Figure 1 (spheres, rainbow, N blue to C red):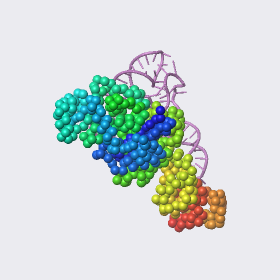
Figure 2: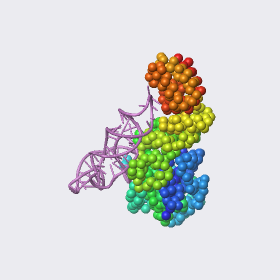
Figure 3: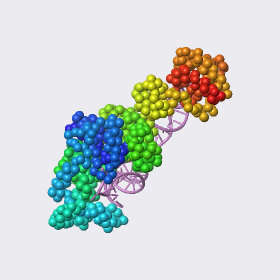
Figure 4: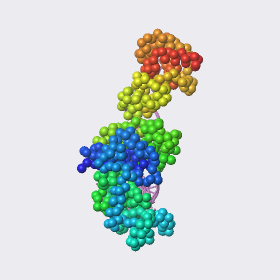
Length: 506
RNA sequence: GCCCGGUUCGUCUAGGGGUCUAGGACGCCGCCCUUUCACGGCGGUAACACGGGUUCGAAUCCCGUACCGGGUACCA
């Protein structure tokens, strides 16, 4: 049977890094199954928390990561619509059935009444009493009110919810694909609200109804859902449906070990939203402050990194393309414990990805950052720059740091000047410029030969010349091989820069 | 509080009774390469939460404790 999985985020915020991992694992499961499908379902049943732009961000982030959606809001599909706010009749129908069967009941308790109940029943040992078998008989609902009274209230349009009627004294066991058998007692499960007073379903109801309607075979979601799973199983039973296979993923923790909260992460300099990894300007400015951390990486690197955060192939492989992940991923090899985000490893992985790119591809990935810095750059020069510096990059936009490949150095590194610019530097640099004037070929070999000859003629060490020349032509003390760098800079510019440095630095 | 889950190097992890003097990766340190900085190569540092069992033998199985995390909403 083909695997049908869904990624079901709620548009209450931008796509979280943990959300992308959940989506990835789901995607991999779908792709490794003949005829499998990966669906995107928007769970927008909470009007009050809806965030404008969140759905667009989710879709764009998935696209960026290369996770192609088979069925979803934009692409459609046989089970459309894929937005829960557009599926209310289906939930209504399910609830009506449950109420008719006596599996669910109408309740009129106001938020104040619930609050009062909790306060009244709270004890130091049990500070959070719930609406359930132990309390439902003391509340205002269809189980305690005479039928005429219930009808009267309904006719008067009194706000009400529908709750699941949980039978106490039973135990619910399910076999989690990652954790094995997990058991809950129904005494611990409250009479969950299924339909809210605004007529919209809660997550629990909508989720079960949709997963069944959309023929989902595997529910792969975060560990925070583990405690609600018995509610879902009970719902499947009450509706007479077969429950899908469940798999609960370990949580992603902040680098310091705690919860990966937006607030804390931002303070620690950790990007939590996918858009913060997508690019310098990928986040909606109204949702992410300008000074929030960014770590623009290649999608291949983030995917590779996330795959390994909570899963391992069982052998020593670390590098995976999305394609390879499809072949290697197994749900039963997913870890059970939370994983701390390790940005160093992401950076390393990104460097690896960069090194596997062609010069042309690398140039294109770096282009936006470079052009933001130095203006329009022609293709050939950008590719040459990429070829020159590729081994030295951690993230593609670092190429923009090497402004000297595109324009005159703006300044000379102060510490570098102090260390490398000696008393004889101006004289030697000037002499080298003279020699380059005579070097029509201006190749790596010829420029190096010229410098070696000069060193010999002047009776000085090679370093006495090469370091000041690097400083003069690039403004820095670090970079690729000197002579390949000079060739990229070009003969005329090189000579001009040498002369200028002689003047400026003396 | 109660319920559920988890616990191997700093971090991600391998390992599922003997092959574990615990393997790999990131990081860190050192050496080589290199008259720069990186890449790369080689080497090093570093872990089975604790206590009881079971067993000839336990990182691996059981129990307890501790700690971490999640849940306990008309949020998802």
